[in-house]
Image 1: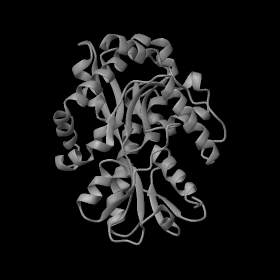
Image 2: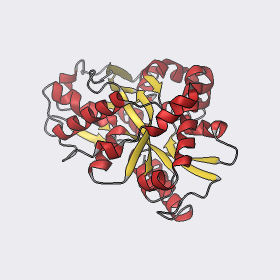
Image 3: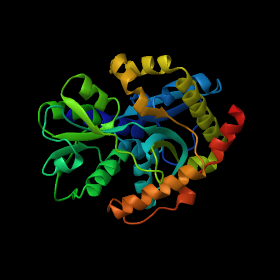
Image 4: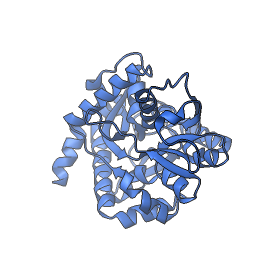
Length: 319
């Protein structure tokens, strides 16, 4: 776990040190883009197929949304993925990020030990639960606890565990449960040490929104044509992979998860790119819930946080 976190930090630091200077416009051919190495966040690895020849997408992988955002704000990435929860939190602090497309929906599951005593969310009282701060999974976990009469601060112990280490932590007894994204829930079930307790999605008010692609506001203002090309490539990659599931999952298997696990998890994963007023309304509802849970102290300016113009342009070109 330490080595993965160290690698993530080193990636962000090297990007900031060697690639770009904050505030400098991207010169053109090399476009550093950040994402996770997971099936549901795979689209940047296909951007090159859909970008004009003059551009070259360089994909840098991270293990958490905070480091991706840090590299973006330092000017070392032109665009990156992040969870909507983390984007809302960052914007509430006044950080100059803009969500220009969706990235994925769904993907979450609450996992407990296969033969353990936890048979309902109420049974989590007194247990240790792994999670990654700043993700939709954290919000879903806190919401699940509160809805079942449990205090996230008093009735359970929440422990930060990187996604890639959750299975091992559960199998060895370091934690009693975890809430994370695919394929780790399906992997835990397949290996015989985990059982899915629930798929904790919100109702219609928030839906299954999960993550998006963000840019710095200065990039949007200085190079809107470049942003439009990236969003269009993202839209085309999302549409292509959705309609070519075998190619999507085969490529994702190169990240280290067996193809059969990804195939089993596919029903709980949804690649995404489009956003509309309903999407923004759901994000606002998410932000309100985050404030109620004490995760943020104030709401961001959603008019500044979202820019739907690029997905509208992509929609027109795809149609």
